[in-house]
Amino acid sequence: MHNIDHVPSLKQLILQLQKVPYLASKNVYRVANYFLHLPSEQLELFCQTLSSALTNVVPCSICCAWQEKTGTCAFCSDPKRDQKIVCVVQQWQDILVIEKAGTYKGVYHVLGGVLSPLEGIGFGQLTVDILLERVRSCNELIFALSQTPEGETTAAYIADKLKSVPIKITCLAQGMPVGASLEFMDRLTIYKALAQRREF
Image 1 (tube, rainbow, N blue to C red):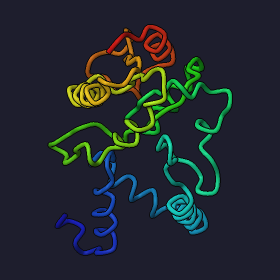
Image 2: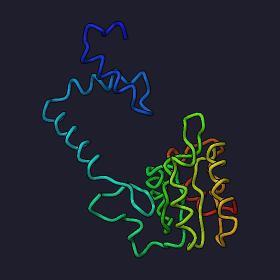
Image 3: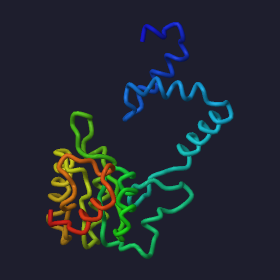
Image 4: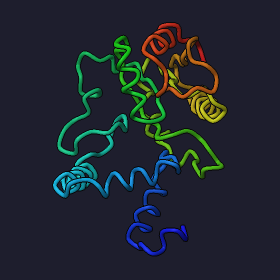
């Protein structure tokens, strides 16, 4: 960072951008440059929008997906959805991927990630307890987690906790390559995985 020490404000901007997960280090400077070139009105609108989202977007008390603070979750409150079938995903954006397939008619539960000790994520950081309480009155639980060691471990833990609960537990079938992340799957792959789900 010594090469921009003479521009302290820019250095601080870069340092803050480096804290953003999933923002590749090679893109940090491009993003900083983008913001510095934004007209003041657009930059102000961006800041206002981000502030508004932080204030008004909250997790649903039932499924933990994002929703407006003053509204209700579009999935949990939809009478056309089968409330007895719960699809478990890692993050809210995974819901968008499944919805694009256009075939799933149940509801969702967002875990907020998967077990990852190296990243300091234990079951206490996930919404497992809410899920376990919720599905006791459901007919089927579908694991739509990424097929990675962490995803498999998380699913196995939840399934073990539900051994005494009379619920059908399934997971995505063919079409989901091992090690793949759900958010990068195409519509047909998601459709096949849901349609051919198997017992967990």
